[in-house]
Length: 134
Length: 163
Image (cartoon, rainbow over all chains, first blue to last red; front, side):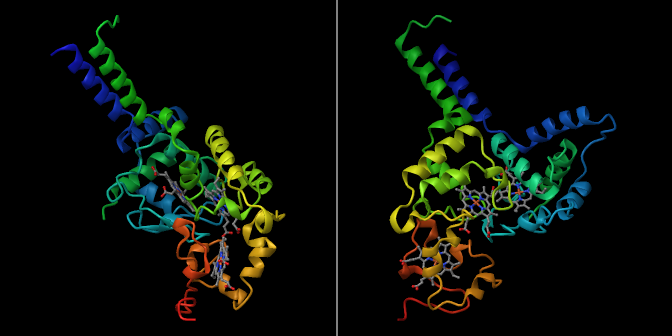
């Protein structure tokens, strides 16, 4: 293989690797969850489902906007604005952009829990929405 | 690495360009208008800049972490770009009023436009839910069209095209 071809390949990998996949987020959350608690024993879709559907002291749950079924089209609880489905099985754009994921966890956890989400909560949430099929 | 061949140099440049386009760094060159449409259109329609004066937009942009009961905070760079876009396209004249609540829906011109022939209870009805839900009645919000030609009040049939 000549040098140009190697460079082309490099360009290709550089271009694709900037787009993250849900599995990479899970790995990051796992590393953080271990650091947050020595008792960490893995994520749970069931805990994620409870977290998603429950209120946490404020007016809204995650389901208030993302609806009871993360595979459905959501609706903003206050403004009625349509929100694309949260489940990557129906909306492959989900959990591909680290800045976007960070931004919305910060905002939505603040609105729903009045604090940031823990890595355990984020990992459970993602495990749950990944488990949802259409 | 020493690069001394033109073709290799070109391929290298292409490699860097390809890597940059896919990375968040490159997002800096996304136009301010696109940023505004994406970031201010996530939770509600992106309200047109022309409906509020620059001073009001500045206040809105400096309080995004406590934005009408929601956290809408942005990173400093995006926030700066959007502030610039809003200031450039801000309203004046009739649309120059700066309401204390920072709401378009609390300006006098808005109230006037929406009081004739309309029962205010419509804004609280389940079909509209909020006065800020412009798109419930203004069918062209995605294109920034709020003209009288393109309005339908939900539950009341086609209001404009039949008179």
